[in-house]
Amino acid sequence: MFNRRINNSWQQKIMTEETSIASVYRVTEKERVKQDDVVVAEFPLTIIFNNEELATMLCSPSKLKYLAIGFLASEGLIKNKDDIEKVLLNEERGSVRVNTAKDPVMGSDMVFKRFITSGCGKGTMLYSFADAMNQEAVDSEMAIPSSRIFELMKEFQDRSQIFKNTGGVHSAALADSEGIIIFAEDIGRLNAVDKVFGECLWEGISTQDKILLTSGRVSSEILFKIAKRNVPIMVSRSAPTDLAIRAANDLGITLIGFVRGKRMNIYTNDQRVLK
Image (cartoon, rainbow, N blue to C red; front, side):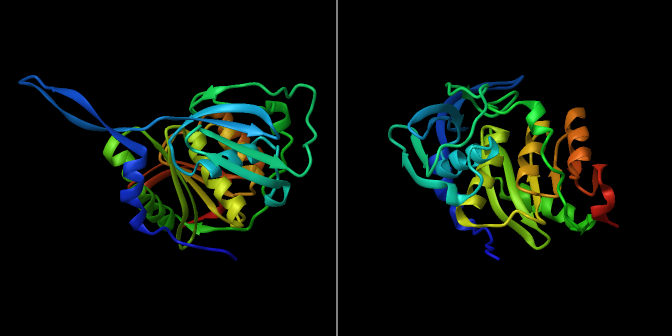
């Protein structure tokens, strides 16, 4: 199985690509001081799928190829790397072209149109909720001690250098019981997840019997994304929605939220978390 660990040497390069400097006034009860501050970068990326403009996404300018691939896979337009004929990224134009060997079969309600999104809130979704609920449940015997989940979340938070410097991004990661395999940050929480899964698909990294970690709110969209990749455990530092809890239960996913320090909430399928 292809496996790799994150090397911290990437941090300085990413900081220069994904952040910029802005002049701000620091105001307190006692003073008002002008100084420079580090802010997160925002980048419009247009995805052109089989020569049709599909969507323009507002995102962080990193792992753009993986974001496009992950987005297309999440929307059901591609299933694996073999579906892709070529990927052409043009950073100057802010576009990525993805061509497939054959056009996917799409329903009459799926019309190519342009969306502007950061992946937060509703975000960009081309499939209907009813279609998503037809997703097969995840089948996995994976189990992990609760103590290891706490350790993984601490490692996950330590990785988030952009957030530490700006407070303006979400993080997502794929992990196994040994540690984090893939890590991504983006201004959109759904974008960050798509970057992780896009990298998995393109680099041939299995997502079965793995854990997805995220910094943001867990909505139903994320549950549908990870169910498509057969990920059995979802862990977040934040809260899930009621629909996310229902979806996780129906999809056979262990949903864990509010992982902070040495406490967590297990919402569904608790048999995968050992004492």
